[in-house]
Image (cartoon, rainbow, N blue to C red; front, side, top):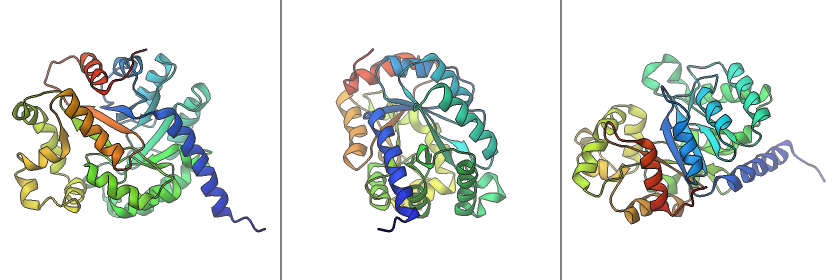
Length: 297
């Protein structure tokens, strides 16, 4: 019997994916990683979330390292490391340091960042493939890397060459579509923005500034247009667009909004809690955990 290298690679990827999937559970958290300490991740661990992911992570994997050092269970992910702002060899060295100290608890999320900010983003698939090749050549297991995929080509690359996809600012409809592209084995870990506020008008106002920023970026605009939202609606996103991408309401409604991604094919869904200025993020973590029925440690 002839064994093909592609069969062996897929078998290896599937085994790594299953190991990660078994540790994640249903719900995790996402938070911007710049100018923050480990207290949010410690709270996520304490209140029973399966993972915590940080955006804007540098090659040193600094905030994931701090959270891993301060906890003993939770999975920590980078969401994401920007391939145009980091050196893959430095990222690989940091990955190996974390894997040696905290085996099986770190997932390396990488992505293109905001393409408007670099000329190199004109050839995204080639850049992603080159970065992945560099990581793998430095001994990083491809199955422990996920890619911030939105469109069909990057999603397909994610499913064929890595552990899976970590889409950002997406709807359950996108999650369903992404699962069809990825197939059954690859991990699918979307982010879902939410506001812990029963009053819908107030929730929309709290979410507004962050939503407006992303709707000005072409990769997110194009992706939402794929999901049936018109350019005119994106230019005047209140309330339809915001309703589509922000979950709020009663504890039951918040849980249902996250579960919609799981029902659509996600393995694990990451809640990004958007809160008013001055609110206590640890209290928000506790409130969301209660809404999801998680058991504090």
